[in-house]
Length: 386
Ligand code: TYM
Image (cartoon, rainbow, N blue to C red; front, side, top):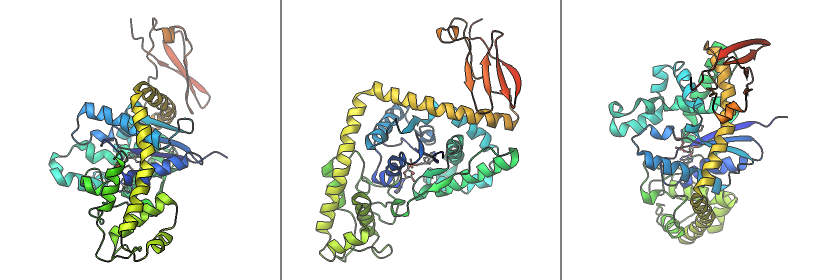
């Protein structure tokens, strides 16, 4: 039996991931490597939908990848790549954009939230169409499931709608992806405002715990987390959102049920509870922080790991796009520009590009042959040098 496939992405928009990213997404990514065919991406193209600095983005993409490997992603058991290194994401995004209604895109609440700050007029069109790029990310890989936090649910609904719409209009092509959301960790809240999501764009430094924070900073932030005037540790989302959030974090990291933890501390006040939780978070993150620093010290290895991930992801994405292009009524993509003098193709006259529906074979005539459903056709490839 083939394994179900998962795909997920994370934006490199900060110098560190935070506890919400870790519990809501990254930890599931690590766990799912064993039971699923797992593909993950640092979605750097999503990170340019807001004003940004190219050098900062370049650095953060690497820091993001390093943190993911340090947290337990294993290139032998999953594919991890930078989105911009697989250009098919942008290509499919355009095709899906042409299937998305303006009103449909306009209903995405995250655009409303993010554009509210500077006003919709000042927001980029990229920020508006961002959920369509997200749909392209997922559909390119025929993902069955998408491990994310609660805030991504609406975007996943759009991905499902677009998959179904494409399939209906052009014939079965895409897998309709299901969300993989664990309710206990799907919305970790801000330590200073426990009714709001912990968020890299809106939380204050005291409200957010970064994966790369120093252990002392982690303990201090937990110690100062907003709770309530009672001194009883118990789960109660409405009356005690701060304590409940801390209990959820504790339960997720220790593996103990929240009720058992609450019973352990009872009405002894919050001091001991917060101290133990601070140590637990600090001890969980310290080794990840150390491994991240080591990986970043060896930038060449990190680049090589990402390039290898892009090669593997790109092979799948190309297959999907060959089918999509054909169904949309486009001619096959020119998959190879060859150079008579280039060593690569010069010594490899028969370039085979195998797709599910397309088998391309580089001929001596400056064409590629491809077969679809048993019929052989030829398409031109263009020499780079005359
Ligand atoms: P991003 O980069 O904002 O967040 C990455 C992941 O972390 C989860 N998350 C949280 N989970 C629980 N509690 C929180 N406070 C919390 N904050 C963030 C997010 O739900 C997410 O799973 N649009 C996506 C990135 C993306 C993507 C994709 C995801 C692009 N393409 C394809 C899945 C599939 C985003 O901005 O996530």
